[in-house]
Length: 93
Image (cartoon, one colour):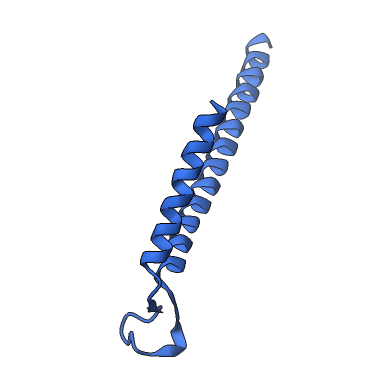
């Protein structure tokens, strides 16, 4: 299993290196959709930096969503337990 994990990591790292080498050209990233040539709302960077940034941002958003979902599920289970306990107390009275 350890060998398989290392092999997968090596293949992914090799793919990232090839992606970076193939996309070294500088591109303009503009945050202004109406005037894309306006340099005040954008920057220039190699394409692979933008690609890796987008992938990293997606991973970060997925991590945050997963954490929030697990917290919300835990709160829901706790609230159900508390309400069922209170309901049992009301039934006893």
